[in-house]
Length: 145
Image (cartoon, rainbow, N blue to C red; front, top):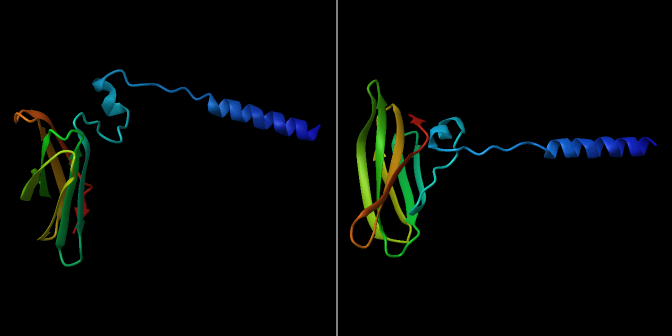
């Protein structure tokens, strides 16, 4: 009898835990309240910025992107930005261009003074006629040096 009660309680808990309602956002206006994890792109398959700063102040700045279509061209720009009282300002930027669907990556080093920094990566995808199809930007987490 004790085994039956324990199994019944376990089955009831399983059913109740599985009955969690799920809700979908019904438009962009709700996206801010939904805790969006990753941006959704149309022509860009991924866009990843990166930043680390060592104890000597050498900032390692990186960015990586790719597109889905081999007839598209992608331009990747990464910007090393420093925070100030008036907001974020770009102190150095680098760019690279390549055909899709190859991965385009940039890795550069730059010495910085003490402060708060981030890297923003911008990918622009163009079709074979040079028409801009998509432009997206993603920024890294901030790093304090």
